[in-house]
Length: 142
Image (tube, rainbow, N blue to C red; front, side, top):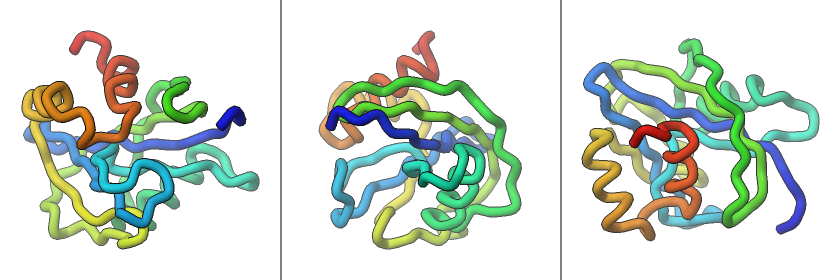
């Protein structure tokens, strides 16, 4: 795909410092059956990044009534070409309090940053292909 498109993504953590990862449904056209950020969505023509991330958070994992912090805007060029506006939030919630949209997400898990980084190196095929690039852009010191 040569066209550049726009995506909003949510990096969600809890007070223990764990990251919420979402397992992409087998029905997804791009990167099915892989782990990725808690929420991500392509921006529609009539919306902006902020409108999209709140909509996607509600649709994909049932998250609403929480204020997100705007993070960096990054450029991703593998395996697809897009700009991604990142948002961050820390919440204290159990996995079973989220409501997953089955067409988008078929699993969620809290994972420590150390365990995640180790697994990303040892099992990269378990994650969306651009996860190493995401981590380098969001957390260059790791």
